[in-house]
Length: 243
Image (cartoon, rainbow, N blue to C red; front, side, top):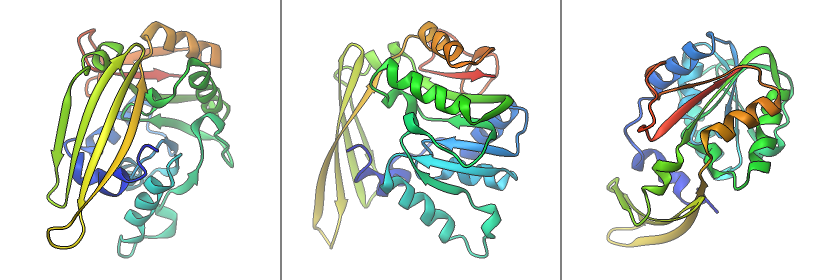
């Protein structure tokens, strides 16, 4: 299963994104909401940044291992008040079921690319729409089909000292299959090897817009990862904004 083992080393291996900057960007796109959904929250780094900015966060993920790491992040925060912590829920995004509505929803770092079919994608969009307040915004990013196809034959490596990870990618349209080998240090020179398979699907951008409108979103825009007007066809990742 994806992130069954990688979850516990994810933050050390996947460095580079400034979650504070990205949180500010997402909030600026969505009108500075107070009650927000962090869908596919992973290890909780974005949720933490949103909480620091005064948001009430519902954090949902389908991986219990990712949620374990995310919850641990807040448990370790000395003096953290309960009301500043997210409500963590273990749910599949295609069967999202919240206790109330939110003013905005975010789904980041190509989590929606992990949905294997347009039917599942449509289900996830419809569930998010159901729990958004009228006028609320859904902001999410996707890897473009071109970006996923370009990974064919690519090998990525990351080294965090106590963990070492190798990603071997292959492309067979519309899927990018990523064989992940994780080595983690146990005792002294003893290392443990674990293997996972991650499969992401490419979604053509016009199809995504069609599915958003079918789910009930009346207004759809595309942005870049850092600038509201910077998305170009050569970019690897696109940010969708839908109201």
